[in-house]
Structures are given as C-alpha cells and as structure tokens.
Image: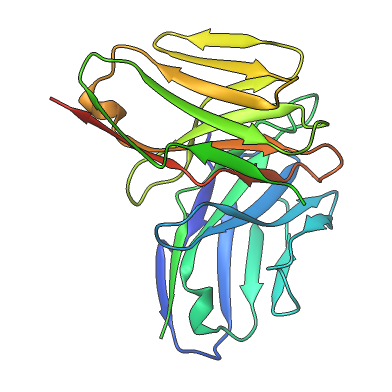
Length: 115
Length: 113
C-alpha cells in the first residue's frame, strides 16, 4: 500500500536555527498538507498546497514557515528561525483528486525538538 | 471559526464490550467526516469516513453515524479488543477550506482484559 514518507524521523535543533522537514507524498496525489501535533494535544492544520501554490494556511503558519515542492516528488516544510514552542510532531499528508480530495493520508511524522 | 468537539476524552471498556465516541461540528456546510486512530508515537491512521449524503457506514466492527440536522457524528466499535486501545480523533472538512481537516481533541480508548 502506498505511503507518505517523511525524513527525518527525529531532529533536535538549537533555537534560532533553520529546519527543513522533507516529505514524499503518495505518488499520484495532488494535494499536500502539513499538520503538527504538540505532545498530548490534537492534530492542528498548518497549510495545504495544490497546483504549486498554497491553497490555505492557518494562523500558526506565520512568516517563519514556508513550503516548497522542489521537484515532482518532494514536499518540504521550512522553519526559518525555530522557537521553543515549535517543538512538536510534524505530519505531512496527501490526498488524491477525482473526488478523493478529502481522503487524507498521513506520514509517520517528524519529531522536532527545539532546545 | 471552525470547531469540532469530541467526547469523552477518555473511555475505558472491558474487552468484548462496545465503545462509542461522539463529536459535534460547527459548520453546517461540512461534508466529510473521517475518523483517525493514533497509537502512541505513530501517525493518525484513517479507519473510517462518512460523507454528508450518507447517514451510516459500517466496516466490520467499526461503524460511523451522522446526524446532519444535529451536526453530530459518532464512532461505534463493537466487540472491542486490546489492540483497539489508542487515541481516536474525529475530524471534519469545512467546505471552501482547502481540504483543511479540523480535528477533535481526541479520545483515549483503553480496552481492558
């Protein structure tokens, strides 16, 4: 069964450093997302991406965050200057087209620890 | 703004019993309601979903019901097994929202032997 894959699985970074989280969505999917989950809390939407542009973003997704699809397979989340409160699990997700836009599949997550 | 409320926050049942988790949503234009199961440290895994044109959907021991008038939907797990123990999240997609999933706060289900 196709899966969304993410790297790294865990990253520890110093406050103020830049972080790039990488994702390979399911190959025939058209919609891509980033969500985050602070330990013990619910999953929160960050951003959705379709047709090479952001289609929606939440208030969490401020100017420190950016997304990119640098080639036909990768989808990245960049945090420019990390803060302690950015520590969370970041999930990449994707969904297909043709009426399946809403059926969203998640990757295993990248656990980010900011120290 | 969009809001999904989920109850209970914790649920403990005996193996073989049924478990019911309930959610309410705020936007009457929502049209898709998935349920995700999340084991500790793992990804949210889609277990069942329902669209707004259907009132009930069943997949083996799992069923979901939707009441559009009351704006609530429920997950029913019958004949619970220890491997059903996990956190369950309901979610809703609000139309015009870029396929943005809004999640409930989660229910920690514990199935006891």
